[in-house]
Image 1 (cartoon, rainbow, N blue to C red):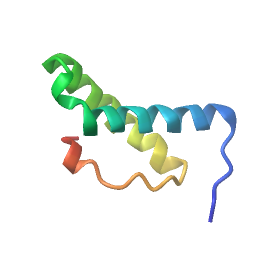
Image 2: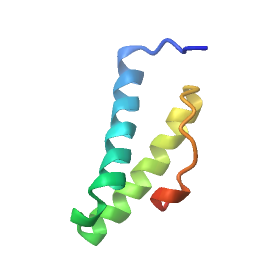
Image 3: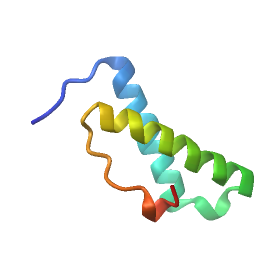
Length: 64
């Protein structure tokens, strides 16, 4: 079942996907403080994704 998102919700989903991609593909290019804060941001946005029924999966492999 597909959930209809408004523009603001879609933008938050895009933020989550963007941070997830950076941590998955370019993590080694981040300074330690940036990496830690990106993981924290991803964990916070995971809550948004879950609330929007986007099935974000688990964050263990990304360190969150």
